[in-house]
Image 1 (spheres, rainbow, N blue to C red):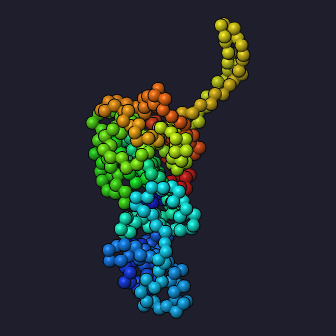
Image 2: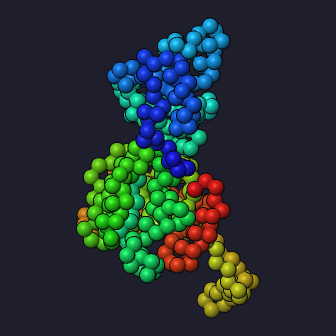
Image 3: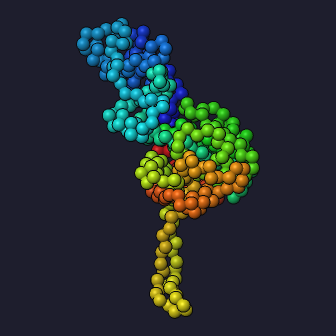
Length: 357
């Protein structure tokens, strides 16, 4: 499983029947496909009744147990789990992770095993829906984009958009949509299968609707906070910090931003009514530039007009004019907007030096 992809599509590798023996459990634990060297003991209805590790087995055998004993004699029946409809996701996830638990079972209301979280690879569990804009033509990257949509160009060993999808998955974001237009069939085929248990929905944009207009074609949102981003970004933004800052400041919209400095190689005159009032010698002005990543309250999306060209900057200006709270979140890591050939080359150079891709 690639780094940053939290869900295991082969949860059966971590499950064992409650009728199995301790020896059966040892054989399974000897298999490298078992995440976190932990097995979930299930009854005939697939309900999890306990967990078992090498340590549990050693304690049972030292206490006089036998390899032929039922696995239930060695299992731990007081275990932590994650509910598939958990509401306090961020806090509960970190409480479990801080206890050194390597894998967390995701259980439905009937306590049936529906997923597994590998805490070594997953960073958080954010109650956020994500929408990636992938409909652009990528004209400045031609001829590379003549036959391939820009999001499917490779950066290192995987596509630009897959870097973004995998990072979203690593933060526990399970509801992801991708809006497509130019060469849409390729993107639809690319996401035709679930990614580690998560279905990526592709949504056709009927015409070019700007950097946020196509969000209106997402039929269902499962959370009250929506992350909207361009699909051609290469960044290691901390989505948990982004989300927690959004919540703490009770924002209607948060705009991820990157520092941008402008150095002027001349002395700049400050003039008032034709008179020089001050002189700034070769000043540097510091700004924050829009990074193309946004967190938005779901209710604010109703302000986006139906089937009309509408950019994210239009929504920012509209919210500000209404007196809504629009805040800035500074990105402290790397960020590249892959718009031109030099940006694409820079991203491919950078990716060779990144350990956590």
